[in-house]
Image (cartoon, rainbow, N blue to C red; front, top):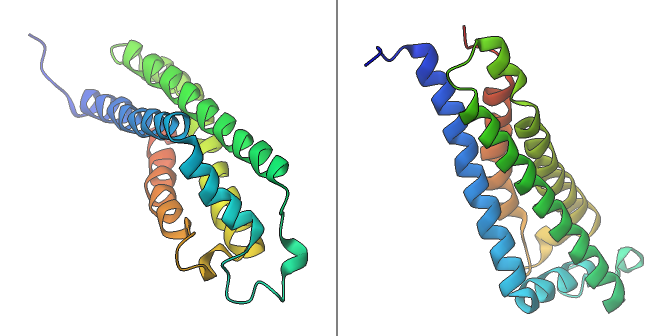
Length: 169
């Protein structure tokens, strides 16, 4: 049995971290497909701005069309599927290249990085920036994804940095 090196442990940790993110993505997709109505209701309230404290001041921002609610929800689901698929492909490539050179392992990160960037776009730009800043989601006591999205971004952003940085030798 070969001796386990720090370099090898770093490679394993990066691939395993991606596995955790894949698991999260699969659970989110499962939730959205199996409980579409509940998640749709959440999004519809956020887009309609019907539970914000100062909704009347910013009512011009509200999207009240159920058809648009469904289309935006399907866009979110599509982004979740994309980030999960890219992360799964990236995780596979990382595990496949664990015993290769550091250069090949580093090149195997591309799908993982793309998946993590899509996840950041979804949970930071869409939920935190657009949801909070445009639709005032944080003002709603019940229909508010702000903290949930913040926790995800708080895990994905450092993961992206750790996976992308080339510290393997």
